[in-house]
Amino acid sequence: MLFERQKHLLALVNALGGEVGGLYFQKMLLLYCLEVEVSPSYEFVPYKFGGFSFTSYADKRCLIRKGFLVDEDRTWKSTPAGKVEPITVSILTAMSRFVKRHKELRGDALVAEVYRRHPYYAIRSEIAERLLVGDITSLKAIAAARPSKGSSGLCTIGYEGRTLEGFLNALIQDEVTVLCDVRHNPLSRKYGFSKSTLQKSCEGVGIRYEHLPELGIASENRRGLKTLKDYDNLFDAYIHESLPKQLNVLKKIMSWIEKGERVALTCYERLPEECHRTCMAKELERRFGKVCTPKDL
Image 1 (tube, helix red, strand yellow):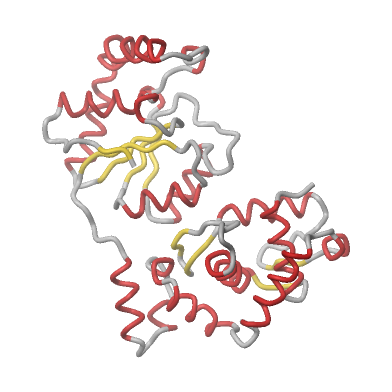
Image 2 (image 1 turned 90 degrees about the vertical axis):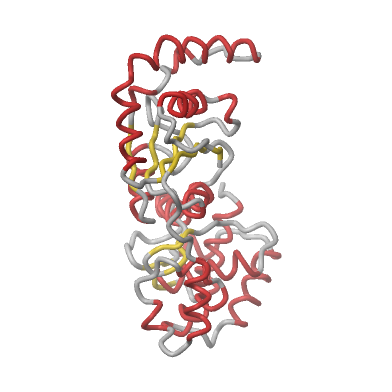
């Protein structure tokens, strides 16, 4: 069984002839997701050659394991099984129409057109100025979409309910420069949020990743949390017993802020009141008055 988004991925490969280069495929996938689908199958981040979906590459690896795609690093290529995998008529019809509309766009012309239509995704591009030479309007649009360096400070963010790309875009748009992972064990069943993948993804969009496990809460202490009182008791113990032992670690975070960084504390929970990152942010604000009042992204 394939996820619906993986069916879209496979249908696009086949609609493009069954074999397509990675850069071309990513740009076509971006246009399809943003301009055809009501609820996009994939989200994208601004990357070195424009919009990029980490999740699509994770799905590519899955489709390779299942025998629907060939294992080639820079090419998306269907296997015989991938060409006959049953995909709904509605997906095939939409994909066919989309490819026909864009059949004249290839190579640099396609990438440049994507930059014109969706300038935000070109804000980290290493080739935008070359592809858009003389196109002052488009280059200005990209510059306008680029978040300016914000003031140093502190914010918090949970990844529950977010895709990796949505999470990264929230950091980019808030001008975060350091993601501080405060999980005790930075592992996740959700794609993109285990330590190694999250670190590489952050570095790919220009955000430094730091892991401070000393500030986490052991998983056994979080089991059985159901009521507001349960959370209150957990966080009361964290504030009065755990955090006072971690003053040096808190000072480390403060030193980053004093050097001009915008730091985001991250953990799992979407709601800040259900996460120890809020306790930590308040403690930093209490101890170091220079920290601006933190907000949750």
